[in-house]
Each structure stands twice: as structure tokens, then as C-alpha cells.
Image 1: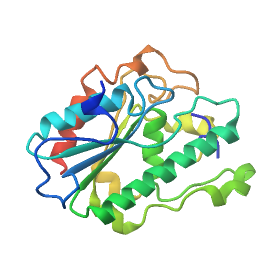
Image 2: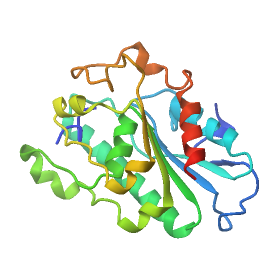
Image 3: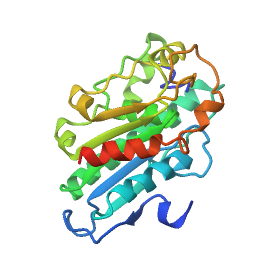
Image 4: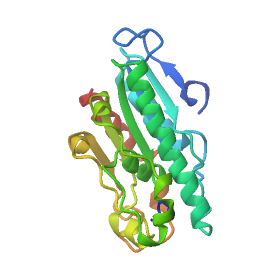
Length: 233
């Protein structure tokens, strides 16, 4: 995470739908639409291992609903040595996520949207619902590239925001990124998961991940998150 952090398959493939025929939602729309951003160069793109585990867990708890799981279109880049290039890929991901949220809310107004992500993707999810961005002074010339916050009218359509291993406030600050400041309306529907000892999300100094950071797809937190989503629909 460095940029704006500066200023398997078939069933779980991005865009797949499972469950009963859409009933609560409009024709062609799912009852629940999960948008998920994978972690930095995470295995099993485009959803990543964590997104696949989470999507499957959501489906298992909502067997009587149609569920679509879609990967947020972004690079999940590890190009931390070129901060500007990394920032562009990250902000492109934010824009992609916001466009999809607004499109689903407009086209499928009865669909319940879940926004989620893992690691870099969790930061992307957090910035996507942000109330604004405090761009560091040395990067203010790029402020026009950063998207506006999601419009207030979208909020009722977002049922939950799920963040696995979101970079800590210290991590983001030391990376030179603006703080993540979600719109207050999302506070009661956002959940964050951090394995004890995971140095990306536990407040440790800026640095690379340890082995614990790789366990979110297998340690039961995907199931906990799916339970959270089911309660917030």
C-alpha cells in the first residue's frame, strides 16, 4: 500500500450468480450483489482467495436469495517503487468501484449491495465510501484525479462494508496516504477483521506482510463476515 496510499472458478468467478431465481430484485438483478477488491497481487484473480472464500460463505447463508459476486476492476498492483503509477491504479479502482455501486443502485434499486476487500482491497473499499480525501500538499496537483465521495442517495442501497486486514491508520499515515474517513452513515454497517499479530492491520510500523496476513481465506473470518452480511440485509 503506497499510493493514494501515497497522498475456485465457475461458481465463484467474478460476476457469477447463484441461489434461487431473482425474486426480491428486478429482472436481471440479484437480491444481493457483492463487490470485492482482492489484495496486492493476491492469488486466484480477479476475486482473490479471500474474495472467493467470502463469496462462497455469503451464498451458503443466503441459499434462498440470488447472490452475485463481482470482482472490482483494478490492478491490485505491487508497484510500490513508482508511487505515482501505483496511485493511479489504486484511484482507478476506486472509480471503478464507485461506478459499479452507482450503476447497481440505479439499475437494480431493490438489490442489496455489499462492498468488501482484502488488504490493499480493504483500503480501496474504505476509500470508496469515504467522506473526502486529505491529499498531502506535495500531491495536490493530482487532486482533480481523485473522485468525489459517493452521493448520499446511494447509501440506502449498501447493506454492508466488509474489510479483511485493512491497513491500520499508522500504516496508511507512514505510507504517506490520506486517512480513510468513511461517511458516517456507513459506521453501523461496516466490519473489519484483523488477525492478532498481522502487522498490516494491527498498528505495527509500515512494512511488508507476515505469514498471518495470508490466512483470511482459511481462518474462519470469511464465515464470520458472511454472518455479519446476513444480519444486515
